[in-house]
Amino acid sequence: MSNKMGIRGYDYVEFYVGSAKMAVYWHAKAMGFDIKGYSGPETGVRDRVSFYLEQDQIRFVITSAISPNAYDVSSFVTNHGDGAKRWAYSMDDVEAAFNEAVSNGAVPLKNPQRREDENGFIMEAAIRVYDDCEIVFINYDNYNGIFKPGFSAPVQKIEIKREETGLRAVDHIVGNVRPNEMNYWADYYIKSMDFEQFIEFGPGDISTKYSSLLSKVVRTKDNLIKHPINEPYKGIKKSQIQEYLEVSNGSGIQHIAVACDDIISSISALRKNGVEFLAVPDTYYEMLKAKNIKITQDIEALRKLGILCDVEDLAGKGYLLQLFTKPIGDRPSFFFEIIQRCQGSEGFGHGNFMSLFEAIERDQKIRGNL
Image (cartoon, rainbow, N blue to C red):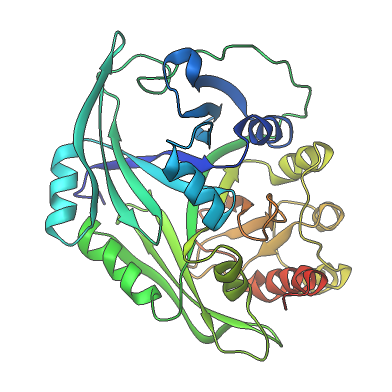
């Protein structure tokens, strides 16, 4: 199926951070990204610096303020910590999609505008999502430059030794929202951008001994874009979603799942590069072996690297391999998920929820936030 909004797929994600240069080094060294572009005083931008990073189909922008005039950047970091501010969809027609979304209830943030330089022009617009986040509609059909106007090649080429991680594409972007906001935001996607609800996890579906949450997954009807939305649910102790809301001072982007074709090689490289992951007990793999499941990968190799395997695919297709990093910043908020979908899997690791959230709770307990 096609999507009537003309969404071609994820384009880029932009992070607002306290120090872009240091965050960029971590993403290049640890995650395997290449630094492809730069915007700052040397390119005529006086209030902020931004670095443009690429890895296969993944495009990240990392931005920090260098002047009080960049209030949007500094206020975001002060309120929420380092985190994802916006993501973009590549669009067939930015203006038509924006007008359609706004007419169906989307909150406009930036009207369609043309930005140009000697390399051509782009069209872009933006709508609101969650608290201080936004979705950008963008089209580069008439642009041949580095990323978009205002960016040039990096001022200085830096050679960074690292293991190549094989990360390929953004698989999905997850939002954490306050109690009673999940349905609102799910409907927001469905009504304004013609998404559909794919999966819903109700009370008791995602829970541990101590905590619980509710979740809905919405997606474009062609499955190009997928957005799980989580909200906390009552439990004996504080859920990971509630912890996120408190340390981030509101709703926002909890994590980005990035896909790879060989998760054993990718996780091995990421660990060598210094990325920290949640710890999974050996008992998980004993239970996995007892299921006598048919997968291509060796379970012992999965155990050595802490990779989880879910064969309970809710769409009835294939199986999923996944692992979460620990939070990558000072606040226990944003993190990455590394994911490999095998044999057409469309799920989100439902069979791993208990093990994943118990692993998160172990870290919460160490932080004193459980």
